[in-house]
Length: 506
Image (cartoon, rainbow, N blue to C red; front, side, top):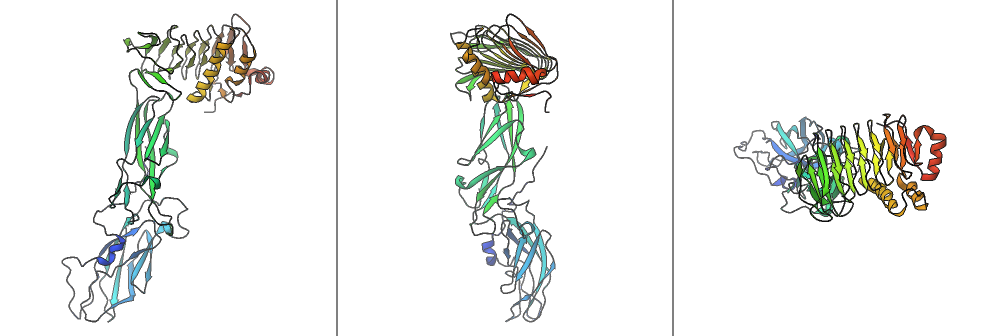
């Protein structure tokens, strides 16, 4: 697993801030040398600002000289061992060194870029007094800190849990700390950033709300399992006149999200209303959606266990996941239903309301119901059979297959048109519907032989290379991807602009 470098910027609670370097006292147990003896240079533990090009380092503030009237010869300050992660310069008028981290040296960081992991550094020096007496060699340890003017951000990993199709709001700053200043985050100055590549969520999307420090993670359609992303938080803590524009970055921290399967339940539908969600398992499942106790209510029977009665105001969504699943909707159920197979061989059968059937991987059997349905076989050798009201059959997959809003629009256009038109009519509304039904959707043929059975003249069939189309009871409209130059171009003029791909792009 990819783990970004950690930048824990506060490592010792006893560190001294830059403003108090001159206030240090001689450590206990270090006596002043007697007159006539060389001065004593005392080791220093101090800090440098990770976002400044020049941090002052006063090494003489705690050094000792017992010779009356002697002063420090600033020009004699000599570095014996150079720092490994930065550069030093000497201000001979004050006796202060100026330390610059290597990444802040010209040309410096690109605007808005975070610094790399901060390194503790050190150097050694000796000095002479005005009498020409040279001190011993002392060590200066440089500890990296953020801008002490506002404090230090320390962030910690987060864990969140949700369920299929359910977004979750994660308060990223709830367990993060803004140390040494005794106040909360100023959210107006907080920015969230994601790293690239492996630190983006692989099975969902995430957005950040800078007004409250929260992230909203939305799992992909049909995904259960776990996901991970990495975020970084920064806040404007420095002044606009500083060499770096005052942004102080924390370490990059991980957020783990667990997307679990749960018993049948109602939950908010991003497409509107309250939807009934039924999760299968990764094994073989038998799922049926049947009428409930009262009019407008339904029940789910999952592997022989009957759920309470629900009254969804939105759609019914059933996921089979892994295993060979059988998902059947009663003809008496008039709700809009979405039936989604998994990676194995599934049976999906629509009921009495408009239905979207997605076979996904495996050799699936998809059966239309009593309303106008959309049947998308997906990858594998599938069998798609239209029913009685005019169905849309796709013998491959489409770019819409993981996009809820586009799938919903496709089903809505197809199903709504059925309420206007006669079963066999090809009137103006039906042409309009067909022209828009798959507009801008790429249809992908997996090269497997599918069987598509159309039962009425109102069906629209998209067959792939090598697919078998069986026409029954009427002159259905169907197109073969073999007939790209003639028949397919004619279909494009009748039904809209479609993009066809004869081979998968993955």
